[in-house]
Image (cartoon, rainbow, N blue to C red; front, side, top):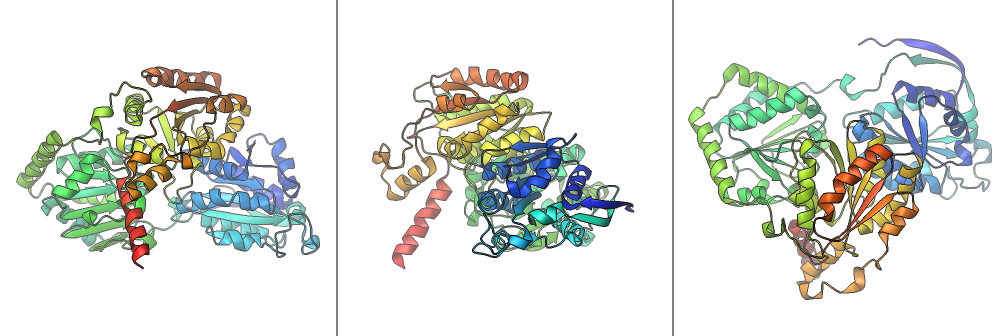
Length: 600
C-alpha cells in the first residue's frame, strides 16, 4: 500500500499528537490532569471526537487504556503529569506491555530551562530520571528535547507500539516543547502504523506440511491455543474452519487461561483450560495419555499457561511452537519445530494443505474420536462437582461460576478477570462458547487490573456488556474507579467475590503448611469492609448477594440496568472463605520453592 502525505505548517507539538490520535481513530484517552500536560488538556477539552476520561489514579487510567485497546483494537492512550503521575502509571504500563497491548503513555515534564533547578516534580535528570525508569518497563521510552525532531520521535514511538508483538511505549514531553511550534511536517493521510501492514516472516510450506503430517500420524495429538490466537480468530470463518478441523481429525484442544473462550468448551474436541485453574479434562487427559504430538499456537508458555511448566505438556514425539514473538519460542520446552509467524498465516497454510491432501489416516481419525468420547464419558470436567448446585450459606464459589456460565451462553458479554482466587475459579468452572471474550492479565498478573480495565473495555465495545470478575482484596485496590464509570455513564457490571480475605495468599499459606484447620486465622483478613456502601457512595447501584438463588436472579437484572441506565452495577457476593480454589499447581510450586530454599 502506498502512503500519501500532506504538508502541515506551524503546528504545535501538542496539536500534532492529537492529529495522530485522530488518525488512529482513538475515541477515548485516559489520565489525571496536571499543569505539565496543560497544552494537551486545552485541546482535549473541546475536542469533537476524542474524550478525556479523568480517572481517580494514574494506575487506574493505564488499566482503562489497556481495556480500551483490547476491545477496540485501537491504541490505548494515557496522559499524566510528571514525577509521581508517571510512576503511578508504571504498573499499568508494564501490565499492557507484558500482555502485548499497544499503549502510549505521555507524561508531562518541567520546561527544559528549569530542569535541574528543583522544579516541582522535575524528573528529567535530578533524582529520578523518569525516561530511564520507564524505559526498563516498556518497549520505548524517550524525552522530547526539541520540537524540530519531535515528529521523528513520535513516529518511532507509534512504530514500536504497533510492532509485532505489540508493545507499550512512553514519551516524556517538557511543557515548553509541547507548546512549541513546528514550522513544517509531512503528515500521513491514512494510518501508517498498523501491525498487519508490516512484513511477516515467510512460512516454509515444507515445515507446515511436516506439521500437518505429524498431526495426521499421531495417536494422541493435542493443540494448545494461547491468547496470541485472538487476533486470528476474529476472522470468524477461520475460527470455524479450525473448529471443524479439530473435530474432523479427533484432535484434543486445550487453551491457556488467557486463551479461554477461543474454542467452544462444550464440544467433543475441547479439553478445557490447561495450566493454572486447569479443567479436570485437561489434567486427567495429560496424566493418563501422554500426548505424542503437541502443537502450541500463540502462547508464551508462561507459568499460568503451563501450570508452572508441567512436564506433562512435553510431547513424546513432536513439540511444535508457532508464535509471532521469536523470544518465547522454545524457551520453556524442547521444541522439534519452531515457526515464527502469525497464527492466521499458519492456519491458512495448514488448511490449504488439508484441502489438497485430505485425511491421510481415516481409520486412525475414527479411533481418536472414539477415544475422546470414551474419555469424556467417564471423566468429570470439574473439581468439587457436587458443589455446582450447592444451596447453602455462605455461598459456594463453585455454584456462583456455574450459574455465571449459564448467563454467558449467548456471548453477549465480555469478561475482565482479575488476579487471585477469582482467576482460578473463572478458568476452571466457567464454560464459554466461542467466540467468547475473556481478558486476563496473566503477563504481569496485576491485582486490581480488572476494576479499571472493564471501564475502558466497555468504552471500546458497543456490542457487549462488560463484566468485571474480581475478589474483594483486588476491588479495594482500584474499586474507587467506579466513580469514573458513574460520572461518565459507563454501564459496567462488577462481580466481587467477598470472602473478607486476601484469599490466594491465605489459601496458599494454609496449603503449604498443611494447616486447613486454621482457615479462620484472621491474619490475612480484610477487616470486614462494607463494599455495598462503598460502591453506592461512588455512584453505583450495589447488591448484597448472600442467599441461594439471589445471584442467578440479580445478575440478569444488573446487566439489564447497566445497559439501560448507563450506570455501574456491583454485586457483592459473599462466598465461603474455606473453599479451596482450583490453583493446586500454583500452591505446589510455592511449596517446592520454599523447600528448596530451606535445603539451600
